[in-house]
Length: 551
Image (cartoon, one colour):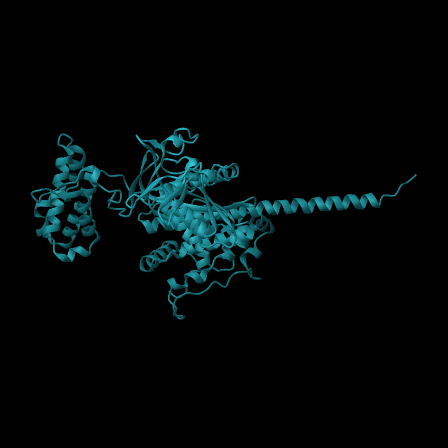
C-alpha cells in the first residue's frame, strides 16, 4: 500500500454536506463537529506517518491518515468500539463533517482500517523504537497551546497505575499455564514423543484439578510438580523450539520461580525472592508487579505533564511504562525531554518525584522543580546553614558560626563526622535541631552535602509563595480520575506494553481535544455575547441621539 496525502481538506461544490437540508447543516455547525473540523483535523500531520507505507506511486493508495487518526481520537472521546466507530462514520454526518469525508462518494473506511493502522504503528515501533503516535499527540498538544494562547511556563505532573486486562494469577497458575502452552504447542507439531509423561495437561479438566480441586495437597508440592515438568521440557526439547514464544516464556518462568538447592535439584524460590518484574500472566508478559500506597498493582504506569494557566490546561507530555518504573525516573526523563527552556519554567509535582539529582538537573535546564514534600525522613531546615568546603572535604562552620576543631570525611557514605567544643554546644539554642550528639569530651554531628541540600530545599518549599504554588499541583490529580471514570484506562482491551500504550496515547489525545473544543466553545459564546451586547448598545445610542422631542 503506497502513501498518498489527503487532498480533500475543503468542501467542494458537489459536496454531500452542501446538498443536505439547511436544518441538518445548522445542527452539524452547532455541534462539536465544527470545532473538530476547523481546529483539530487540519493540525494532524499525516506526512509523519508516510514511513509506514510504500513509496511506490503505482500501489493502492492508503486510507487518509489524518482521517484515521481523527477517527481513533473520536473513538476514545465518545467511548466507542471499532464497530461502533465505523457505524458512526457511515451513518452520522457529524463524523463525516469532522473528518472532512463528506466529499467522498463512499466513506474510505472498512472494518479492518483501524486495526491495520494500529498494527503498522506497533510493527514500526518494535523495529525502530520510535513512537510516531506519541510524537503526533505531543505535536497536537503544542498546537492547542498556541491556539488557546496559553503561557507555557507553568506545568504540573502526576502518575497513575494502570491495570493489565490479564487475569490475576497465583504462582502455581502462572507456571502451570506456561507448561500447558508448551505441551499444547508440541502436540500441534506432532512430536508427541517429548510429552509422553505430560499428556494429562491436554485434558480439559486437568487445570481445575491441579489448581483448584487438590486443596488437601499442599500448594508447594503442586508447585514443585509443575516446576519439575517445566524443567523436564527445557532439558529434552531441541534447540529449534527456542524460537517459539511459548518456549521463551517457559524458560523465563522457570528462571524466575525456581532455584537450585545444594543437591542441584530444581525447587521453588521463596516468595520473598520473586522480583516485581517477574511474569504475572503469560498472556501479558510485559506487565509487572508493584505495591503503592498499601495497594498491589499488576500492569503498567502512566505519567502526564499538564501545561496550564487561566485560559485552560493541555497535557503537553506523557510517558507509559511497566509499573516498576518509579516517579523519580519519570521526573528525570521528563526534564531531559523538555530540555533547556527559553523562559524560567516551573514544574509542580508531589514528593515521590523529588530528589537532589532531579532538582539539580531541572535547574540546569532553567526549570524550577517544586514538590509538595520530600521522600524519606525530612531533615531539619537548620541543617541548611552548615557551611562546607566540597573540594577540600571540610566543614567550615555550624549554623550559628562555630568552627569545628576536627572534621573527618567518609568516602563510602559521603558523610562528614564533625567534632565541636562540647561546652559551646551545651548552651547553643539550636542544639535540638542541628543533629548534634553529645559525647564524653566533645559534641559530634554527622552531616553530608546531600543532607544540606535537602534541608535547603525543604526551607525553600516551606515559604508561603511556594506553598501557594504547590496547591496548584492538585489540579492535575483530576486527570487520573478522568482516565479511569470516563476513558476506562484500567480496561484497555489489548495486552503488552506497546499495544496498551497506543490506546493510552489516544485517550490522552481525546482529553486534549475535549479541552480545546470546550475552550473554543466558551470563546465562541463570549464572542457572540459581546457582539449582541454591542449591537444592543449601538441600537440604544442610535435611538438616544436620534430621539426628537414632540410637544
